[in-house]
Length: 193
Image (cartoon, rainbow, N blue to C red; front, side, top):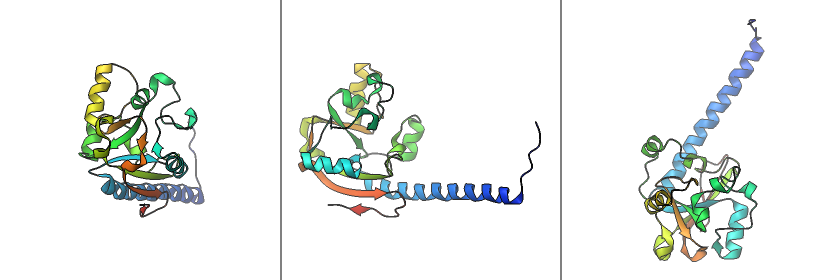
C-alpha cells in the first residue's frame, strides 16, 4: 500500500470537519438530556409538526393515519417487521414513568429509543404530546403489560421492551396533558399548551 501524503491544508480541513462533528454530537447530547428531563416520569407520543396538525384536525391520534408506509417507522422490511402496536390497531407511546436511560441502554442495547429523543433524525424536529393515562382506562397498555402480551403472542414484530406502551384504538385529544416542541439547532423547548 502506497503512503499518502496530505498537505497541511488538507489535514487542517479534516481536523475542522471532525471538530464540527464532535461539537454537533455534544450539542445533541445536551439537547437529549434537556428533553429527557421533561419526558421523565410520564407517558408520551411523539410526532412532527405536520402530523400534529393532522392529529388536531381529526381530534385524535389515529392508529392508521393517512401516511404512506415509507414515512412510517419500521416498514421497509414488510408487515412481519411492523411495530407490534400497529398489529394491534394501537398508537405507540413512550412509557418513561420509571425510565433510566443508561441502565435501559445496557439492558436493551438493540432498542432504538435514542432515535426518537430529542427528535427523529429524519424529521429534525419533534412534537411531544404528554398523555393522561387516567383518561384512557382499559385501552391503555403500559410498557410492561405490552411486553407480556408481545411475548405471549410469539410474534417477530418490533417492540421497544418496557418503554413502548400502547393505546388501543384512536387516542382522543382530550387525553393530552401537555405538548412541547423541539427542533434541530434548538437549545430550548417550546411549550405549545
